Amino acid sequence: MSILGIDRITYGVEDLAACRRFFLDWGLKLVREDGAGQDFETLNGCEVWVRLADDPALPPAFEDGPTLRQVIWGVDDIADLTALRAPMQKAGSFYEADGALFAIDPNGMGVGLRVSRKRPLQVKGAGTNAWGHVGRLDTPGPVYDRAEPVEVGHVVFFTNALEAATAFYQSIGFHLSDRYPGRGHFMRCAARGGHHDLFLLQTPEARRGLNHIAFTVRDIHEVFGGGLHISRCGWETQLGPGRHPISSAYFWYFKNPAGALVEYYADEDELTENWRPRDFEPGPTVFAEWAVAGGIDGNTRRQKSGPPATDGRFLTEKR
Image (tube, rainbow, N blue to C red; front, side, top):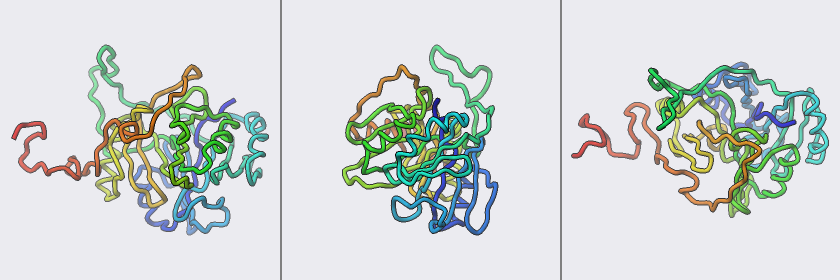
């Protein structure tokens, strides 16, 4: 028994029109909308719901302003839901509806469990040609005009209840991958899987809130192609592109009108039950091995904060 991953996220927002533009630019498919909100989905059917912040059907907000209000995790079958009912009942505001289990986690975030509705999907990222391992033969690497996210890969929350929140997620089957002792826990929802599906971070201010939502794309080339497209659409980079040394993933973060940040990422580490959690000290070089400040302009394909390339020479040429 294990959780399969994120099945649906729901935002509570203030500006539906801006969120509609953003998520369409982001590469999601709009499947339903009305005056109360919009339903988007990724390539594999992972759902992204956007609702007005004052919608009475939403769980209570754990911070002011537009933010995430609920994460629903998918399981394999009804037997898994039955096995997970007891630990969910110990959380706040437990109830059942539409064949799913719902509660509020110790951090104040709405959490649900349901039989997964995501679709099997046959997509593959580009192979890489590392020394001694040829993954791409007689085939050029792809160039993407924009991204089409495969799924919602992970969520990251600020918390003032790190230990209690960690204990709750471990009670429903999550595994600790790595940690900042006393400060942050990277967790995956199954023994075998990507480095983290959830990251809980307790800053010195010890506040609750959303840090970011991360969307999985095929490969590093789609991280770049998607990021360049979003830049051309006029949305603001927060940081990236860059690379996380802890998970090995490549990233690009943008500011999101639905709340906090949103990330394209690819090529994270895959772990098994043999993995042993590592301890890290927080710091900028631990967060990012390298990163582009201000992002890359989607039209010039150059760093926004860097000197303009006006004479046609490569940046590596001597001047």
